[in-house]
Structure formats: C-alpha cells, structure tokens
Length: 454
Image (tube, rainbow, N blue to C red; front, top):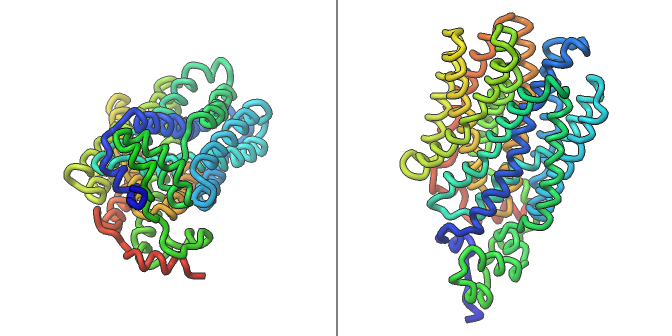
C-alpha cells in the first residue's frame, strides 16, 4: 500500500534484537574503546618525562589536559556537523584524525611543547567518538532495552582504559611511553574499516529525505517487514518548515533549558572526577611506595569495572528506578567510595575502593550520556549530546590540572579524593533537574518554533 505511512522511531522501538543490532553495538564499542584508551595513556607519560622535562605538578597534569582541550572543541563542534552531514562521515573522520595524530605523537613528540600541541590536535578527532557513538546507538536500539544496551556499547571506554593500563605496565618501561601512542594509532585503521561496514543512522536518513536507504536499513532491522518498508512512506521526523542551521538552538530553548543545564553540570563534575583520578591516582600510588606495576594497577582497577557499573545502572533505570533515580544513586555511592580512600592506606582496600569509584562514577557517566541522547529530538540529538560532553570536557581538562595544583599546595593525596567525592555529591544533586523519564519537555509546536526562529 504505497500511501501507508511508517513511523521509523516506533518501528525501531518495537523491534526484536537482531544480528544487525549487535553488529552496530560492536562497532560503536570498538570506536569508543579508543576514547577510553586515550584517557589513561597520557598518565604514563607523566612518570617518564616529569623530571626529564623539568615539569611542575600543574604542568604534568596539563600533559593530560592538553588533549582534553581538543576533545572539548571536537565534542562541541561535531554535533552540528553530524546533524547536517551525517553520523557516518563524522565518525569516520574523527577516527582517522585521532589515529593519524596519535602516530605522529609517537614519532616526533620530544618536548613539552610538541607533546601538548599534538595532543590538542589528536583530541579534535577523539572528541567526536563518545558523543556521536552514544547518540548513534540510541537511535537504533529498541525502547525496552535502550539504556542497558547503549551502556554496553559505551563500555568500550572502560575496556580501552584497561588496555592502556596493560600496555603501559607491560611495555612502557621497556619500549618507552611512545608505545602507547603507536597502539592508539589503531583508531585510524578502525576508521578505514568503518568505510566499509558502518551504516548511516536510519532516523537521520528519514529526516533528510533519503528514504530508499532508510528502507534498506529498516529491512535489516526487521526482515519480516521488509516488503512493507519498500512500499511505505516514512513519517516526517523534522518539524515542518525546519531550517537545519537552527538545530543548535534546540538544547538552549526554554522547554529544554533546565535539563540542558543539569546535564552539562553533571557531565562537568563526573568528567572532573574521571580525568582527575585517572591522571593522578597511579602516580600517587607509586609515590606512596606501592611500586610501578601495583601503582599503575590502580589505573586498571579504576577502569576495569565501570562498564559493569554502567550496565547495572542501565538495567535499574530500565526496570525500576528510572534514569534520574539510577544516576543519583550511582553518583552518591561513588562519592562515598572515593572518600573511603582518605581513611585507609592499605593497598588492597584502596584498590577495591578505587575500583568501586570507577564502577559508580564512570559507570554513571555512561548513564548520563544515554540520558542526554534521548532528551532531544533527532534533528538536534547529535548537537545536544556534543554540547553536553563538550562542556563536560572542561571538567576533564580541569581535573588533572587542578589535581596537580591541589597536590602542590597541600602535599597529600587525600585532597584529591576529597575533591572527587565533593564533585560526585554535587552531580547527585543535579540529577533531580533532568527531565523525568517518559516526559517530553516540549510540545512539537514549541520545538518547531525554535527551529524556525532566526
């Protein structure tokens, strides 16, 4: 029936999981793993070059923060590009940029200035991966399993962080810190593979009138309805009369503004904790006398279980607590476990505590990313997620830098853990201001008005 109109979002919400869903989850997982890998890799550079380059504690922290400046710029700017030109080319471009400049860093960075500059450019590519991957996979997943499975895809972040720890512990002393960035160049190889296997977002295709391509992808998602998709007309996704250049205004419009601010502040606080603990905990444990392998094992512990924490958080959100309740609970428990680092100096208890801090606080970031992706309409989803993570990356930038400044001022690692626990507590409070599950913060007419406004 040629006049039959299909709501593509409703079709995907009601779909059973297929091999195609799992393929997409796997592809996003691999891409995000390079973002997670990049988080921990610069921490090993501090150990090797801090004295050789005569760096102060704040300069050592900036070895990590420099890349995050680029990541913030990439996160803020990529959403407008992805919403205009597509998720597929933007993701591939981000992988290629980060891979190429990781390779250049390994080959030519031989001073503080050159390392900082190259890390900044690498970050421009890396800033695309997490927000775009999160928005992309949320656009494909069925409603009943969205939070849990999107968190599974984002778990690549934690696996990448563990991978950096393993490579750093096993190979960096023998081959130098450069080995970490030779491995990081694999992002470029993944980008080349994505040219062949990474499909465009179906919702994006429908929103931009590319209905034949959308029908082919929908047939892979729901093979039993393939004939219907060939003959049907897809319902309009964009508001009537929408102008693409105004999409960036939607997250800042009145219906979304409170949720947007709560999302931004939460992301700032959680990434402050994530990057601050990632940059300094391994080195602090080495300085405390735990030895190189055990000290940097703390970095592996921090990133080894957040994907489990994110999946459990997503399951609780899907089944019982909702996204606000699950996020608030995780932030509060994360603050408590981080604060426990202050009251004991036993290595085994400390490594358990730091693992649970990652379980709750980094796992909570996964939930926050998925919550953000589903807060905004499709034509502004990439932009909204990019804005949140772009703003949040400033917390990531300040985490290592302020961590170094606090350590220089107070001379005790306790101050770092107290600061992280305080940020987790504030993030818990912010969760109350995010839009409630199942409640649209704007009527279609309001969104259309924002989109059409000059």
